[in-house]
Length: 494
Image 1 (cartoon, helix red, strand yellow):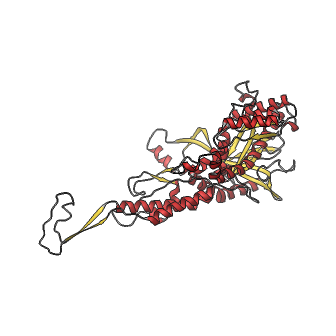
Image 2 (cartoon, one colour; image 1 turned 135 degrees about the vertical axis):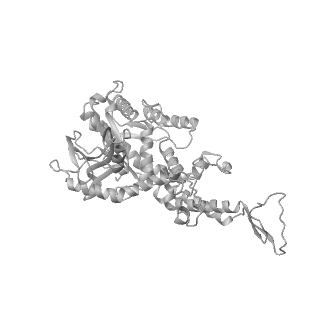
Image 3 (tube, helix red, strand yellow; image 1 turned 60 degrees about the vertical axis):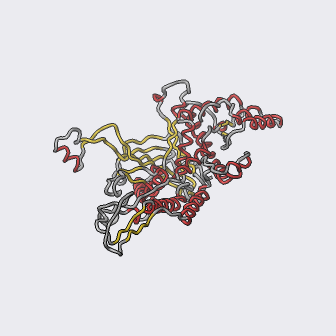
């Protein structure tokens, strides 16, 4: 399955060539990081400081999505005294991504152990619940879904903290099991040449800021230091850090690609590559899955362009303008109530133009762009709570399901990939707990089953009736209670 990459295929005596790591890092910086940063910019649409002259006066910021607007809107005109055209950005991507995340993980997912012994299953479920709670609970899953929706995939690295990191014995050392959610710009997978679904190694590369200072060797720092200003000759120290994970070892190095210095090499006691790879939506023959943001970018650019054009048209037409011909001093006497002009020119006249006017084609085009974004994302305004005049069509649960069929279908498809990833995450966590003697367990006890809550509002009465029917059919009471949220881990956010 392309969603979870299991064990390393590396031979115990084989190591990753440092030159290969440098080549992978350089390719990642040139080919992948710019794309990932653009995906994030279109989702987040961050504010960026800018001088008033570059924005045409007034605004102190640029927006991330302005990079997709045509030059006729973003570039200042060459005519002196005329400011840049008005820019309008309406981020239709972010609320769609947030809606998808809410439908995936707005409520806790129930993890049920498949261990044969019921008491043992209860203990495993409680231990896994403690691990998820220690790693953020529902927010952990929401972070995974958000990063996966933006970048197309998300990786989770299972680490084991030192025994000194245990601050409380109430969880039995569960807080030592750490789930490090890896965003795409940090991840550099080393895929098996014969199978793209398997990892030979996994490289993390990121910029790490330290709680230390160093001399500021930049030109600006030296000039400020010569000027005698306080705290200008030092700056906060930061390094480029690289981690190379294999099934047998972990190597830590510092420095940019091509000039890395190894600072530590330790044995990977787990014996497996502890990485869970989750594709947001399956994409065969690629490590990355399908992003929710990428297909919306061209439509978002078109929407922002038309909204900016409309804003400039409205600005131009909302104010009446006057053309005075043959009237002396027309510019010194503004048009207003009771204002009079006198002239002996029989050809003199005042021409009025401007004023707002309807533009049906423009409104229709903007509406069609939004509908196209609904189709591409499967997220409609109804799912985000914007009902308008559709209340009469949502009088029953079945009606709601029909209206949001596309969103529910996509959510179900994503639950397959994320569910397999969460199950693999539980398996790795139990394996790590056994290796480090935190919670001894056997391999056959590590299988779990996930119970997903309904993404639609709950009808408690109907759920209880369904539970009674299942009991009547002979479904074990433990499983029914777990599905209803009354299992041992109920109330926990994991």
